[in-house]
Image (cartoon, rainbow, N blue to C red):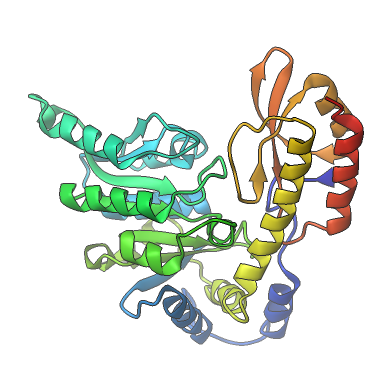
Length: 347
């Protein structure tokens, strides 16, 4: 079975494994205050073109989202999100479990607009019973989105402007940040995120690391006591150096970018192959996640050899699936899939 259902099916990039082995018997302080974490922080600050940001290393995406949102909101506040956002759909109510409501907005390809955010805020403050309602205090978006789509710099600038006028924190979930950075046509880079967002993170778990998410805080109001929130949310790893070492490797010799570029290129090869056979795509993704809409017969044929991630039924005879690439995706596996697309998708 050749697996294309996610970008975390393998362990970690070999360079990270080598670094962990080489440093295995080092003795360092715990909880992320070691020299490896400090060096990784400096590398990330350099990549963001910001020396004044705070960088923290957490373990996983849901944990990171819950920690950041709890740190930014008062008890009566909630977070605006696309209805398809990870915090609204795939985190088992993690945000709500800490006392904060997710306030979902309709989304187009997983994205929300500055106009939607402004409308939601205006509707709240002009409601006669606003004090009886959850107050929006933060905006959550993902780059890339859950659907593999990307915000342009213009869209992100507009969202940032609305958030600042309304006094809302802008939080960008970057679990798959690398795949967005390296996508052909993308114009949002790390310095842009560090300028326009109040807080974002650079995902490692889905971009070649064994585990890990690097939180970058740009807004001074969010920096104070953030480590207290990390600990309270069970996110402070005792052997914190394991996170620092991984990000040292990812941000040396452009490895993070190389990993993402490899995955994006192969994903686009797969997309073009499906399109050449008139297979429609559920979303217009230029990242490592592609969403072909297959007939039941085609899906059954592919399933004999390949593992895709079922996404949704589009009608009685068709299903959308996610086809995902990663640092570890082999070109020969993609070539085999391309040949089978030619064989199976005869439209």
